[in-house]
Length: 330
Image (cartoon, rainbow, N blue to C red; front, side, top):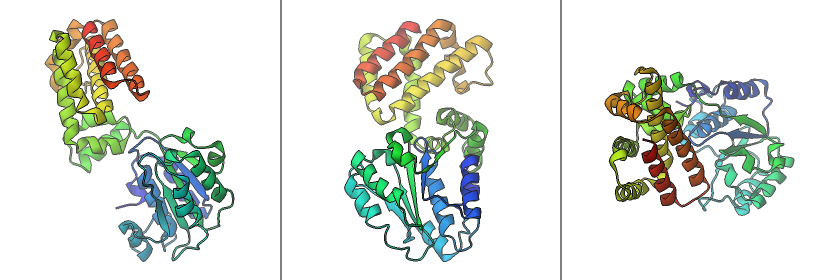
């Protein structure tokens, strides 16, 4: 299914887009701004299908010829702008797929909808080229820019678009989705909800990812025994982590949640709100041997490591310093 009723959370965005559909006051350009996997692609797909639906309602009927074309990814008037270079959307991409195409009237729909994912990857020249279309768009054109960083777009682009910011989905809604739609066991859903932090797409990916389970097992094994490790063993652990370099943010999130659990248990002895309550004995040991200040220092060090990695500081150096800080405060 692919209707507005299938979008979890994002009530303000749904209301805005459905009002635009019911009143006919559709903007020529939208920015959907939110982190990766937060549901921008799905919302754009639903809105594009609703715009082209032959029933003219607030929901795509999903039955008419236009909706069936959209669902199959073959609607001639819903255009996905693609780019060959993985990290760059070039001026040629925009000129060829948007500027050079938008003057051609729709083949069968009321609109021509352009969906541009990862819009933050547009070069300055590409953005300036797109600006020409945004300044004088044909009445049938709707351009949807999906981005994880609206600040990477030129102010002149942003000022000509309606910006819709994705909001974190409430934990209970994410939990209900995982347990109901995906049949995820309660204990696993709790972990995925904690890691996803309101990102339902991330929660879905984590729940079905074998790699995540491996990363989680590696991280917990390290945290349980780090106090007994010598320097050579820490260096070996860093090398092991490099195997999961693409998931290092998940690795660090596991560590943060572990120590937050330890801090909570140390302060309250309450197991009901622990994410890793199946590891209660190991958590109790961590809470007993670490001071409040020590656990807080570790959580701060984890945050610092994330920022350093985002700034492209040497991966092995950052992780080695982090693990030594964890050991010193454990």
